[in-house]
Figure 1: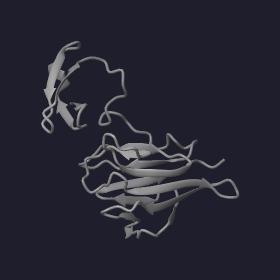
Figure 2: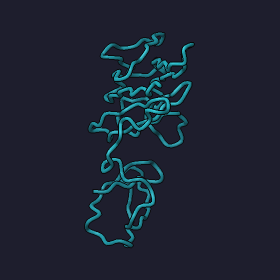
Figure 3: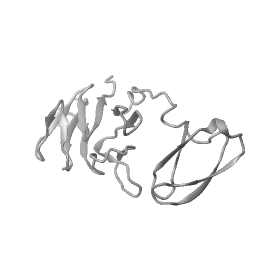
Figure 4: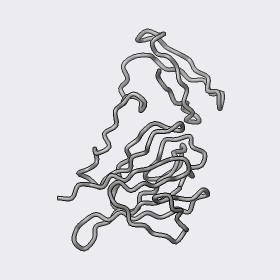
Length: 175
């Protein structure tokens, strides 16, 4: 099965690509916004679809670490790289400018849900600090809800829950 994304509203449409030949053109109508668009079947120039790719959880070990989004009914497994400074985490919506978007249809994840700050301490080690954005449904660290003023230091393997979505911190390797 393949997925295509509506260019207007970003809704995914799934279809069976084995019923078509390479080079064949298909026209879809988005069930959400009624936008009609076409695609051509063939070898993709983009990455493989998330459902079919094997995601390496440790691919950002040498940078600043990453967040692993655990697969559930709302989305596929994802690995989101972190950068120094504030990493604003939330649901991807077309036109929203956040630094770490999660591709999900989970309605309980806000477009700006929580923030993970990455910085170096005085010894040069990376420090990860979690806070709520604030969000409507709250941010949970190890099953404890954070208030708007809470700041929690994260370690490798820390579990954060936003809405029905589970995130796992993969810290960068220290040298």
